[in-house]
Image (cartoon, rainbow, N blue to C red; front, side, top):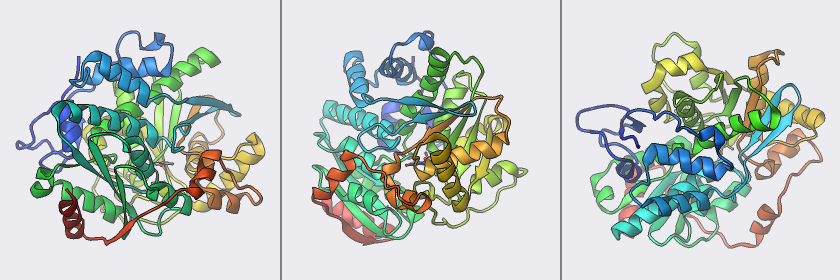
Length: 435
Ligand SMILES: *Cc1c(COP(=O)(O)O)cnc(C)c1O
């Protein structure tokens, strides 16, 4: 059993393709995003699995078979990619924090990057070819992809990140010297980086040179991100005896995580609904609240939850293909920086817990949504570890400077980045010069 994928724009020159083709193309020929032709129903037995990895093997296999790699190889790659804990931490008020930051770069992006890197590399080995991956990042994607793809035999990575829009620690993580990874510091914002990546990926000359993408426009990123929604449902029932369908609050920027959750829901997972928790870049909550007429994407606003500073979320194009389900199950909220800081303080006072600013947006949006009514259980995705954002945390919580041994050890490592203008032509010549 497996599904095929079609372009979100559904034009005649973009026929349905296999998972392998969607993985390597990134973007469909008509510049749409690949979406499943049909979301496969959850496989029988998904509620009986023992571990997160067992769940991953079962559910991913149900979506894409063995990706043409042979069942044994596919299974061992999935287990190796997803070998870190997923923690569901109870809070007060019938709330649970779904901690997705126990991977090597301490953000949820590790799930997708580690899976995608291994599957791509194994496919390339099989086909005896090599590939360069271009990634536009608002911070956490780049470090996860750099980590998840470095040292693989047949893939090389080029990272684009917006100059001055990522934290010093994020920049350190992005620019570490790693085998097979090059960082480009772009004189622009995240939307510029994303536009440049899209432009070059649609360019035939660049494609011919063996270049693809790995940011949240690639369908392969979304598949493993469904898994932790399912795992949370299993844990709520098994560990906490809960049978009610929960609400999920998803700190959102490019809307990849939300789209993945929606796919889990469309596949039959018992989910009450989703909250798209945005910062001041709240185009999507305003779209949800509106009557459906299109309105332009505003420019990106810089906030203290910078991994969500996205003015024009690219996965909206995917969500729009299932707009009915989105309107029926998703509510949106925009959270100001001030409310984010207050939520960080409150969470520290009430739970003795230091959370990252993105997670604080998720917590705040859930409270705005429930408005004191705790009868529906709430799961808030903790998308990153607080130690990735020590400046923001210490500003909200004087005296706190969260840290981890992994991040502390980065200070001793070598870094390197090339600087380029926010210009697709310049990126193209960089790629062609190197490929
Ligand atoms: C990427 C990221 C988000 C936003 O996720 P999307 O899938 O782009 O909506 C939220 N929080 C953190 C910490 C992130 O790194």
